[in-house]
Image (cartoon, rainbow, N blue to C red; front, side, top):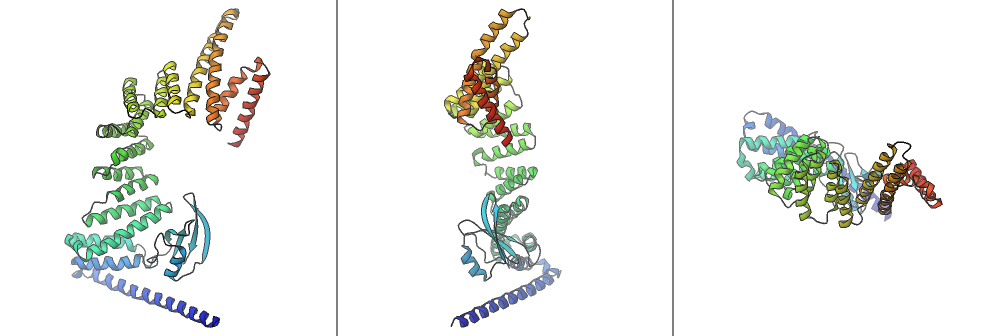
Length: 435
């Protein structure tokens, strides 16, 4: 009985292979006939001719992968396709482990749960069939837009789904520009069907940005925004971010200022604009006004106080800068940057007094000692703040370096200070070596 089962299994495999060969032969014949039909000037004037051509090209585009369905288990999938992989390889995709099941014409990527995540095509029955099908659909639509109400609608729906699937597959494989092209064609296909696909237009912008094609990214994000897909200012924020990547800070500011008029309570827009105002050294009055507006909207946002501190620091007002940095630690007790920057402000005050002392006449010992005595409390205050920052984020090497320098000045104060210096000096060296 066991032998008989094996014989029957082998016969089934042979039958499947024979069936697949027959299917491919039939498809090839259909393609040849359709090519001849669209080449006939008389028949090429009919929208139906091009719809039929698009349909057979669609069949060719997915002949090898039509049984693949994202989310199906690999066991279900192998039963559907009636094939066994040539190889199975463990790979990492987008930081996550996958298994790649390799076949002659495609690869299937399976996630940790054993489900089909996406796939890649290695061989096309007719190269570029999907894009050719799209061109045929556009040709039919150009001849008669009403073709989309009948058979054309079915072909277009099939094509739309294929562009979506291929786009996501390419995106998952890191082929962002190619994915964006698929999303664009999905949106254009939907448009021919009488729909506005704002999501696909947005996805195209995102994928183009991640591919480094910033101008195209902005083009499609603007299109999404213009047709109402603006995510309550989120798309404006994204556009401004890309403009900053391009070094176009003034364009980014214009984008954000226009968006804030429409969405004055969107604090992400406000915060982003304030950051740009600080970077481009806008008028302090304008920035402070924006900061006050932002703090009213989100009083517990420590980042706003950090921006205010940076502003006052740039303007040379150390007192206001230190106060703003300390305020950041009040609204966010774990804000180590606030503690670090406030510590730096205090240390600078001590440095200023030391510089004054060093500029005195060598004979003015009394004046020199007086200035040194005034500097010590500022350094002590800086140490207190920086140690708090170190407690919150012990792996921040900049804080360790500052503490090392400050304790170096206090080595002569006794064994305890010397031990502190040695601790931070050794820690700094070990962190530096690990980088």
